[in-house]
Length: 125
Image 1 (cartoon, helix red, strand yellow):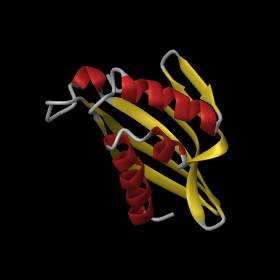
Image 2 (cartoon, helix red, strand yellow):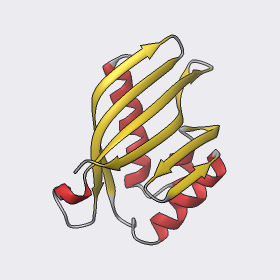
Image 3 (spheres, one colour):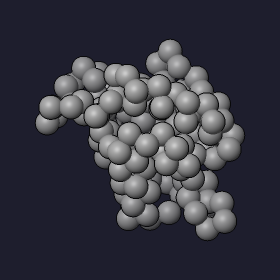
């Protein structure tokens, strides 16, 4: 997985976020994917989809996510990406420092496509 491939997958994933499309967003995750956020644990693509659908119907409505890869490591069909980012809420042009996160992505290549097997983030500050 090259830097270009990482950015392409993340850009497509985050376009589905900007579209508030939980189905398209969850399609980037493997069937058994895990998501760990402060106070949140979701397991499985369906759980990710339901979590994001609730967010898009509520506090994440009209938001978009920013993500900038800081480190990319590839070993065969697995890639680990450490990134920095956050949620950009409607009407805002930057992510406040208090809402910035550092994230770890685990990608796996299945059938030639890169999918998210695990995602976790924590406050950057």
